[in-house]
Length: 120
Image: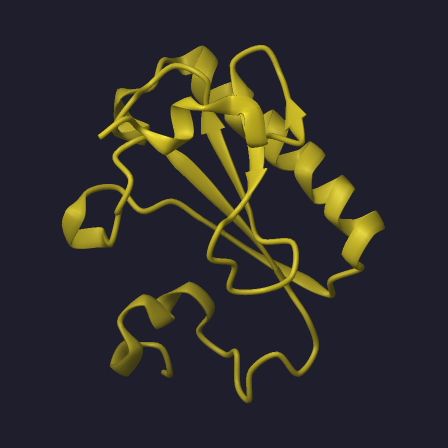
């Protein structure tokens, strides 16, 4: 099966080495994925130029989402490998807008990937 992130036709922002597209299964309005244009499975296999470009585009995505959705906060994360929950083996950064009241108690943030470890 072809990699869905190698198809850049659904992107809404792009830079020299990266593209941004809305997540097909968003956890919040505006949930965006920033991917490398080149097929690279792991963040740790990306070149330093690709890594730099990914983060530059993450900043541009944030500016876009601020204007379009006015979130109050963000979670930004990368799943690297099957045991971390990566389901598409093409490096991608999740930019997840967060909104006041979107969950009862957000304390612990990304620690919630292991729910019983989120609250401390």
